Image (cartoon, rainbow over all chains, first blue to last red; front, side, top):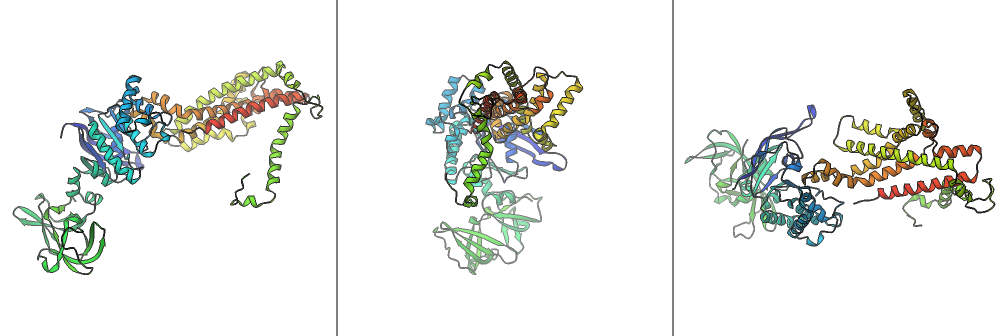
Length: 364
Length: 264
């Protein structure tokens, strides 16, 4: 990818002091690239909004640096940063018309009223609300207000657009539409979008890269596919989609590869590179849809076996809960109508198939 | 009148007469006062015929006009000063949280609860101790003080209802602190400011106790003048002056009320 626009270097942020001190961000480092749709994903309180507000200039970092195209931003107030924000509440100025809202930032930059007006019309066109310039915000629906907030923030052509959970107030259908719309706007304008959300589906659908955050730290940064298919932490595997977790010991798998030996004695070969330094007990994750079922008689000696305890039919697929006996349940999801034998009965003994590259060893 | 059947009070048969009695108790004296201001007879309590003469008499009474002028000078000065102070106080109080905030908040509105006579005596003693000559200036200072909480409350309420992200959005869109205040905060706040100012104006115009104590020669305000007139004897002229004050009060309070209802 191209050059770095925003760079956070060991950024920390604490609120309060003494006994009330709360660490919102704990030495976070991340590079965000030109023309990228970058998402910060995590549960509430993970620090994603704090990081966004630090980039916007609404909060001051306690430690570390934030750079814009290599220049330090820390001491610049928001009105001196070529960065604009779409707020969660939209924060449209209620006493101004839609058009005056959009020209606000332009006029503050000293652009003539005439040029600003022309630019506002372009922006209204871009968000497909060309006829709404003379209305006031209270006359618009939530989705329309959302688009105006976008138009207002995009009008000054910022280097970076920050979006603070902008879709959370919309209903499901509108949210899906806006996801497509946001992606389109990002592609058309070529502006770097930094998006904050707690909705994993939203993050997977729109982002070029996702940073998964927890307790003030970034756990993993990667493309949606990478985050989903190769989670590095238990939290990431659990927060995004569904995962099964198994505990076992790292052993030599032969041919320079490692393997995991479960407590039941079964050995699962790994294709993932695992550092030689790691030994002993590890947790591995595997997605339910990467598992398959076979009749117990067809299962190999090394294969996991268990008893079908619950079957839930979902239409497109069926979920089987497999009781492994000694410790845990394993969830297996198989697509219906894919031609595979998918008829197992509750209480039946089965063997579980898994592709080795679906098994991920998680960080401690 | 629409009756809400779910309200058990409406099942009480005597509700209409009770309500009538209540409103009569509140407003009958005022209605009588206004009616008698049109009474031809010099003795205020005996009706002999309709006339506007007492209004003419009142409006050509130089002492009365001087008192009215004093009242307006005091009310306008106190209103302007109190509203500016209240706006700054409200802005300060809405910016983040600090230690002892609840205490400061309570102290700002405490003057509303202190008995006026106590404030009056305290203020008088304060001016005397400082050796300040009693007059219009002392009245203006004292009025400013008790007007502040009245101006403060509606402004604070406006600020509380304002999304803090609005100012952040203005800053985000390249407006510095001052421009954000002028272009966003102030336009959204002005109904509260105006409403608070109107309220202050009326409270000041109406004040008797404090004006009586801290006033001096040449600072007679309208309520004090009316009090003086009554001591000589109640004539319909007093009624006429009172009726005019009432109209001014109603107009200002109504405007204040309507402005306060402005919503974006």
